[in-house]
Amino acid sequence: MEQARAGEYDAFVAARWSVLVHLARLLT
Image (cartoon, rainbow, N blue to C red; front, side, top):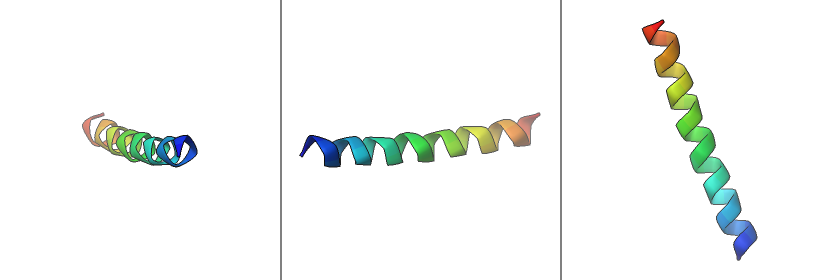
């Protein structure tokens, strides 16, 4: 169960970072 939650968290963080990087590229 913890493994599944860790996987979901990783996916959430990855999506979050990809959005942040995309915004940073647009702003700079």
